[in-house]
Image (cartoon, rainbow, N blue to C red; front, top):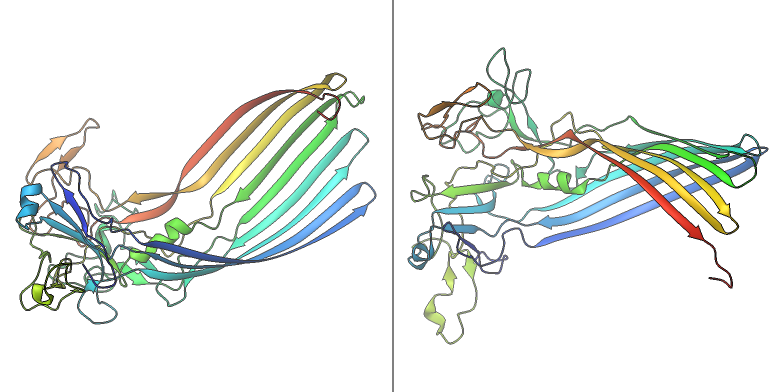
Amino acid sequence: MRAGLPGVPDIDFADGSVGFGSYNGYPQIFHENIYNYVDLVSLSHGKHSLKGGAEIRRNIENSNFDVGRPSYYFFDQLFFAIDQPSDEGAGVDPGFVSGQPAQLATSVRHFRNWEYGFFFQDDWKVSRRLTLNLGLRYDLYTRHTELNNLATTFLKGPGQHLIDDIATGAGQIQSANAPCPGDQRGILAGECGPGGFAPAKTLGQGDHHDFGPRVGFAWDVLGDGKTSLRGGFGVSYEGTLYNPLSNTRWNPPYFSVDDAPNTLGGGSSNIVYGPVAGGTPTYVGPSPPGQYAEAGATGNISGWDPSNPHLAINTAIVFPEGIRDPYVENWFLGVQREIRPRLSVEVNYVGTAGHKLLRAESVNRVPGGALPAGVCLNDTFGRRLCSQINDNNPNGVLNPNYGRLRVWENIANSSYNGLQVSLKQQLSHGL
């Protein structure tokens, strides 16, 4: 095991047998400090009850979502018994910035941002029977920065569409850069083309359109205080989306979640599993209990060969243009009626609709691209799908410089509609 990452490496078997060891996504430590300042002002004037306020919030997240302990994959227990893994996955410092050989690494990050909110509300008693609630809120969620300037982005190549372009046949992912066999830096922008991973000051541009109106009313329908009709509508925004933004820690140039299949796994990478003759030990610890000191409690039970390629198989990308703040619309309409003294019935309709919700899309893909080499077929939509697998593209992906490119996008929506009915009886003697 690697010094500083104690625990048995994650061992998995392709035949479905139960594996063992420590999941390489641990430890996960998210330490958040939120500093908040709020000030409100209220004023009553005639039929108006006015309220305004402001809020300032400072978010500080110091976290470690560690994938630096490798995972090893075996065909079955027999291959495990003879120390023959077929694949290794691990979080690696690729050395692009430090200039040092690639090595297993943690992914400690320190994200920071500011949030501002302002609102104004007027509860207007139009008449004895009608009250209106009118309000407006504005929120500004500044985009996250990283304390040590470790934020990242991905620069797209030319084209009109992200994945494919009808006119040119190549989308912005495919045209980001050309294949760079043997070039470890080929996944970075400017190395083998205009696009690729690049450092960034913030996680995308901000959204400055977060206006949230609020409208409501309460009406005494018959004027006898026994029947009321109420309704309202409001818009609210979500800006503190730490999980998708925090996962950008796995992006190059500062980090790379890599995959190393050897010849057994259909690749040409080198898997470091077990002691390596002449190699610098990545584990140094006490001898096993009951064994003499020379038993060899040093070695490379888990390590990383710096010559393996960096494909960034697990990423979380926010493009320079950024993402929008998701928002939800809420509405309500209800009637309340006193049937007899201390007995009332209430019927409400409530609804919500979420817009611009975030979803991660895998964009480094081609329909049919992973078919066996040389195979083509027609799908149910009348498309001719052909394998993209060749010597320079062993996985049949859109851009062979990369593994899985996950891009956060505002492309999801949600809706809810509900009917609520209640009967309330006020009893006596405090019950």
